[in-house]
Length: 473
Image 1 (cartoon, rainbow, N blue to C red):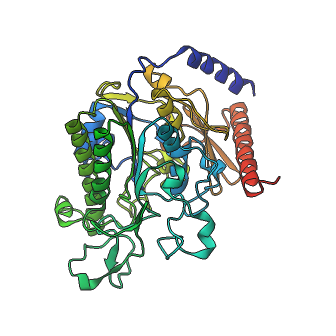
Image 2 (cartoon, helix red, strand yellow):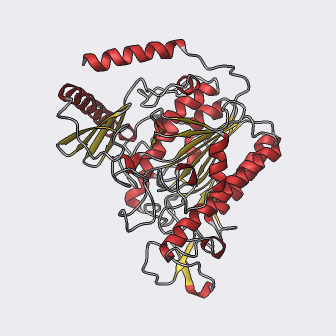
Image 3 (cartoon, one colour):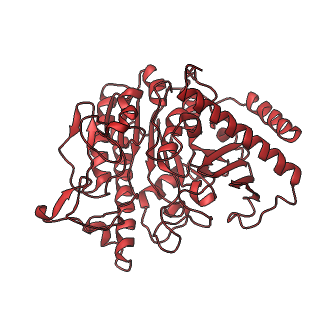
């Protein structure tokens, strides 16, 4: 594979020369993730209907990623990649509600906790079940899933306020009695007409029962902000992982938010309203950091876990100009909105076309925090973006690989190889963002090289999963 080898050698030479400027004080770290938020669902990517003024201000004051990808086309695998820096196919988490975060993985929370950080998880966990004692959400409390019991505190988080999986985006613990719809509903105002949604919030001391009515994004932020305040008063750096459920189905918004969209359908009002409600909580967080005096040295990362739910033209979510949606390795399924705000290090109004994905979080944050990578598990699939971002580079030295269901994909800067079953396509996604023109016939050698690289990577991940299942081998 001379093309790949020569490219990587040159790029890695550049990397070896670059250094991060002025390490200074270790930063606080906040990782915000939305659930099923499409690339085109935010104002900073051109949406003119959904109101996201706080995220738009965040984009204007920091770095907007034009080409940021989730490591998978669905939820749980992407979340595993964030915490480990590894591809979910290595982790044994190939899709949602499958597998769990293994004890052997050394997470970002464990790295930072070892360095003295306070660590907290708030919102959607979806990397294992949170109770053995009662039926909860998709898998919790069911004997056949007991082996997947693993909580944030088992992976380095000091405190947590978490759900196993999805909840409604308003009044997260309840739904209307005998309500057949799974897409949306109006909030229940009569307690006699509500029933349990079948989920719970859990923490280190068990089930949480208070402050669970109203907007779910606000409920989550009500726990994250005191955690940040306590860490700051204790003069401790902090890692706050804030994983909103918005706008995963069922989307429910309160009357204040739905009133902002009088021309929209009922489904759209709740979808749009839930996003705007989440956006307000991002603004609340940013304002609180300034009040505490820690905004300057706090890096806030924002992204989505995959593309939007539903069929194009039938569901409100937007993938922007891209083909595909959630559960698809075309751009619309994995190319997601993403930002980085860090006032002391990132100048306002920046953007980058550097190809990045969620597996890059861990190595990038560790480098900027001046911490070594400590893990017996290799290899990482992510790379540190620190030298690339600081040098203003738009090319990545190594490919990004993806696998979901019967699909595989490999992105090498502006080239993307896509496989669905045995069908192989090559796209230039810099010139052909909608992936409408297969150019594999024009570049047969490159196509063969990328295909070979992708298959080798997939086999390597498969071998690691087999070892996980059969450790005695």
